[in-house]
Amino acid sequence: MFAETPRASACPTYKLDNSATRVDIALLVSALFLQRFSLSFGNSSTLQLDIVPAALIFVHQFASGRLLIQYDRLLWFLVMGLTATASLLLNFKSTMLSSYGLFLVIYSLFALSRSSTPDQYKSTLHGFQYLVLILSCLGMAQFAAQFVVDGRQLIMFYGIFPNFLLPSPGSIGGTAPWNTIGKVSVGGLSLIKSNGIFLVEPSTMSQMAALAILIEVLVFRRPRYLILLTFGLLLAYSGTGISILILSFPLAVLINRRAQLPVLLISLFAFGLLATGIIHLSAFTERVDEFENTGASGFIRFISPFWMAADYFDTASLPELLFGNGPGYGYVPPRAFYYASGDTWFNLFYEYGLIGVFVFTCFLGSCFRRSRCPTALIAGLIYHYLFTGNNLLDSPLLIIMVVLCTLNGPEPRRGRSDETSHHRSSLVAGSAVG
Image (cartoon, rainbow, N blue to C red; front, side, top):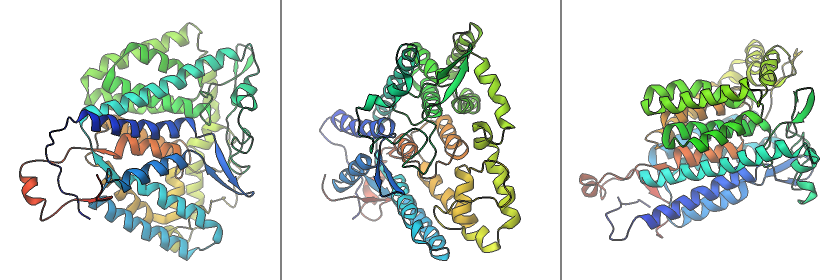
């Protein structure tokens, strides 16, 4: 069914805006506060709990006609689905089906959109800021509380939640690594890094705080938020969030001159915390050696994928390079003497090949087109998605990207578009209802 261009309504728009904002915040709550919880099916299959309420929300919104699918996004999604299916059939194993299905389900969410006003989108950003601020405050309290209580038990919620919902630190259902309880040596003490209690890793706390700082610099510029978010960023003692800001701040300053002063202030504040010893600089400088340690986090995130790619190009056949090795297959270099862990870009290439990478890039490009999301924030999210870990099927991050980048689109053009909407529409409606 085709959606006609919405006409001006006599009803006030703030009610619609509030309703859409509540939906966005519900999705963000699912992504941020449920990511550590999962449902296990047997010994090898797990489902992260955050995807369940998010999927129900999207299905309800689409069925009630509040979400639309743009034709260009739909076209590229169908082509992407065909390439993923081709890779599956050429390398078929029954164990690939779960990854294949999850890949199509999660990325179908990027094809959904709705028209939104600037104020509505700003309210969504404010909701994200408030949620990350809560996590930052929890992280600050968590870091201080470990001097009084058992920090491990605090992270594990003191047994409040059943064990089957909350896998042990170090695993997702016993299969995928989590570094939920990460330690850092500070002043001769071994302390637990802050993960905001609800986030899977301290690095995730660092990444979310960095994205929130970037939004604050670009849109709101509130000193109290910047201060608390900076504490959340630094107490995670992780370099990934800092790398997001290092890459995004110059772009933010070039595009938006009003961001120059907040960037300067936040840089001076962070420098002050490090210079005074409130945040120990040595905990960051010592981690530079991780890029040479083949089993350390820095090497695994930023060096290992490139070594894996070099090994793979030496051994892969032409069909494998073009069509990939199948969903969720996983590459282990035959002569690897290092910890092999591919980032999103490498796993996408390995599983779906060069053709899949090209189609996938076109699909995401069509989804990001005409987004209300600030350019610097899109750049930070893309860098985070591609280069800080294997985020190809990371539902929490992907849900956040959908809400911030692709779900909220510009309002339909009026005037001549009203006259031509009867002949052609660029949108497919979810339902006739609404």
